[in-house]
Amino acid sequence: MFSKKSPDHKLVVIGDSISQGFNNGGIYRTELNFPSFLNQCFEPTPRFDQPRFTAQAGIPLNLEVLVRGLEDEYGDTIEWNEYLPAAGHLYSTLRRIKRYWEGHLKPLASERDLPYHNQSVWGFAMNDAWMMNEEMSRKHIEIHRETYSVFNVLPDHAMYITACMVLNPSFDEKFSAFTQIDNAQYLQDHGGIENLIVTMGHNNIIGTITDLRFEYSEPEDLEKPPSERNYTVYRPEHFEMEYRKLAERISTIGAKRVIMPTIPYVTIPPAVRGINEDLSRDRGGYFDYYTRFWIWDSDFNPDIHPHFTRDEAIKLDMIVDEYNEIIRDIADEYGWIVVPLNKYVSAIANRRLGGQINVPFPDDFCRAMKKNPATAHLVEDPMNPKISTEYLRIDRDSGKVYKGGIFSLDGIHPTTIGYGLMAHLYYQTMKENGVEFDKPLNWDYIIENDTLVTDPPYLLVELRNLLRFLSMGRQEKITKIGKSVLGQLMQAFSPRRRSPKESI
Image (cartoon, rainbow, N blue to C red; front, side, top):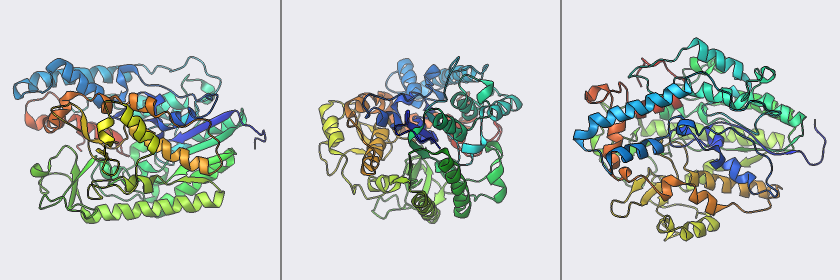
């Protein structure tokens, strides 16, 4: 164990998409994730290395950039007679992105003396922290060759490509078998770690949302690589087994502090649209059905559209409660810090809470929002703010956001502002547990860099038509794409990355 009083590495992260900064369907500007915002609160600002994926506006897809590209070509709305040429533009754009990322693997760094401080890879489940490495990821890519077809316009192996570039960015043979745990241990052995954030476990249940399918894990799933897993939700007993394995490995690293969050309810993000049978929106906490976010209430038919039910949603939340009890118990055993992320997200889930929130937004955040002309209107009434956990909506007259703003266009991952609110909760919790920050969060910087909220594409005004266009597949006989872009995106998030010919 490293015994130096002041470790060299102020902040290190082992995690998934949430700590990597995934939003709008891809990983793009990683300097806008919540660990980066926290790192900026230390003075002088410590070294916090992490890869950036700015080529082609990210991987596997950046819906915000995609929509802006459509807007540049077709203006503020896509008319019915423009659907065919717009589909052609969309297909060629996605094919270019796919070709770039699925070409010869390119190292992100020619030479590195240390692994990245942010060891987050979107799509990783708990056991991937000690199972997956660059060598395994590369072999998967080589064995499962990329396909180019109308059924598969997103990069086939986006998560594995990302893993290669995070775990061993210089493709140095010395690090080819290093996992996230191994890389963190290397940082500990070469300078020491003061604060180790571990954000794992979300992908052990998110498949119920991406697949709209409720299938428990089986014992054999615990040892399978990602491509062979078929579960959408971990049985609580499996979650405890794997979390204890994770905790044992984390404890042997020897970081000064370990910080881990609870898992938010997966029924809150607007990736699933809650619909009542009578189309009412009465307060009650749960809806009769949960379906794709691009299916409008009046269009929904339970005999046709994929969905899960109120009872299944309640069951999912109860499973998450069990997960979080396990996290708190294990953290207590090791003396680790727990960030109450589930409690906070639940308290601002206004649609579930009947249009209200149970906790106010941070004062510094509200002041910064009011200073910015693009966001001031969202917090005019602090007791009834317009910024919310609902899907983003744009006012036709002003072109400004009037609803949503915490979750990005993929419906699962936060916006930059959402990551800022997450950083605020970490900041508070870590400070209460002895972490000494030198500066507050830079809310002006966070808000200015959230282009989706401060300068939303006007094409989002016609949200229903836009989502219909992006969700079109071969059945509409009007688009070149065999399976919808949004459907393929949900598949990319799924714990089981299916072959291109399988439906979703």
